Image (cartoon, rainbow, N blue to C red; front, side, top):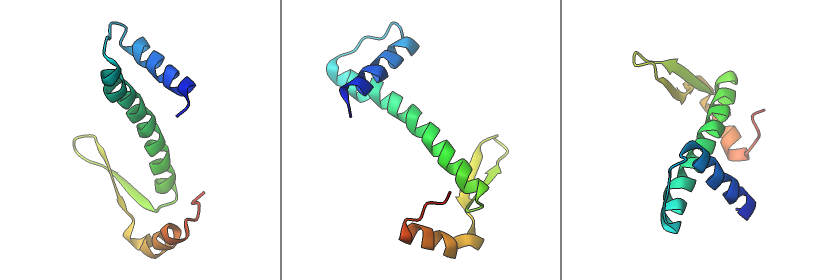
Length: 90
């Protein structure tokens, strides 16, 4: 990862937690991990939205308000082919 991206991640963390203090190891383990999780959540949400729109994945809201995702079993053959061939789903 480029050093400039790490600098931005550290600064973003400090903006959200202005009184934070930690060691080199703590920053690498906790601060940067939190930032990467935030980024990953955004990317996963986008991917899931596309898969749901393409009806490859089914989303359903449960009583607790959480959305659960599952395979669209009617599209298993199409999904297998996409995974095997590495075809973009867009």
